[in-house]
Image (cartoon, rainbow, N blue to C red; front, top):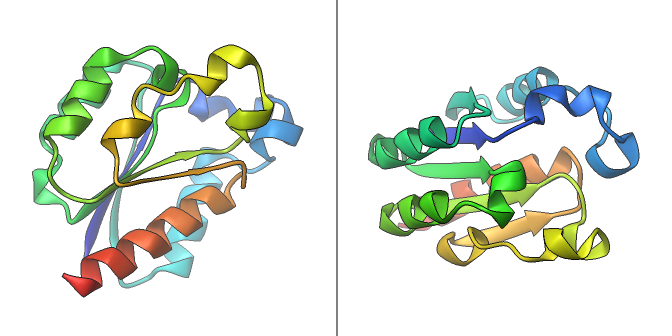
Length: 142
C-alpha cells in the first residue's frame, strides 16, 4: 500500500507553535513514528508552503492508494486545492492537529473538507495515525 501524506503551510514549524493546539512533535518526528507504526505501508511525505505545489501533488496522486492531507490554513481559503481534491478519485482523509470547532470562527469554514472521504481534527499528531489506520482499512476492503 502506498500513501501520500501532504502537509500545507507552516506545518514545518509545529514545534514552534502553540503546543496546546498543535502538540509538540515536529513533522519529521510524526513522519518517523508513522513509518514505525505502519511498516508495511510505503509513505511519501510532502510539506509545502506553496499552494500550487500542493495542487500539483494532488493532481499526480493517482499513483497512490490513498492520501492524507493537512492543508493547514489553505483549508479555509483555497478553492484551487478544493477543486484538485474533487477530481482525485482515490480515498483521501483531511486531518488537522487542532480542534478547529473550538477555535476562531474563520477556522470553522473549511472549504476543502467537503471534497475528501473523511475528516479528523483535534487529536494533535494522533490525527495522522487515525487517518492512516482508516485509509488502510478502507483500501483493504476494496
